[in-house]
Image (cartoon, rainbow, N blue to C red; front, side, top):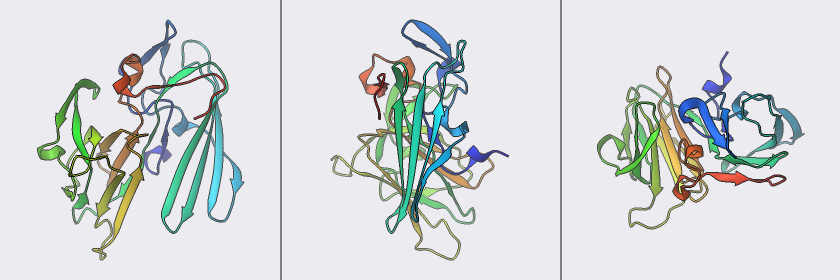
Length: 248
């Protein structure tokens, strides 16, 4: 009934929320619908390549007219399963006029509520959020409930998070390849571990989300800050422009 409530939806051409459910581009205001997590997670995909250990699917998003998001693009997703795990790649081709974008992934991981999950996040800052869960532009050092620096600490299942982290560094302050780690997800297997790996250079922001009334934890890597489309002139926000005919 609600397939995007689990799995690993793509978040494109915007990740997380858009303040006011509108955006301004090239002097015109457009309505953003849906106002959260982009257009791909509700799209119909078709299989274009199917192999023994991989599958490639694609979808095309066309302008709906009026004052809605007016951009035209094709997305292709490839999933590959091997001895290292599951690798997911998203490729986007702009079929129309240039547009601003951010991208994210939204993996849900199941947890065993009978024991806490050990969660390790190599992020040293978290974003201050307003009442609409939009960043205020202020970042704080991770302390208390926001501190999951390696080697990590338990995340209790009934703790509520919908928070944004950034500044991924190792314990010595150096650059890090991001590996978000869970432990003890399955019963009767104390050594089971799951990791989500991504480049903090491509995805400098990460959302930690614990869905209410569901036995899952979500780690969402983002290429840009939430609502970055309203801060096009701020290089730190991470918004990117996909020009006409370009691919990403």
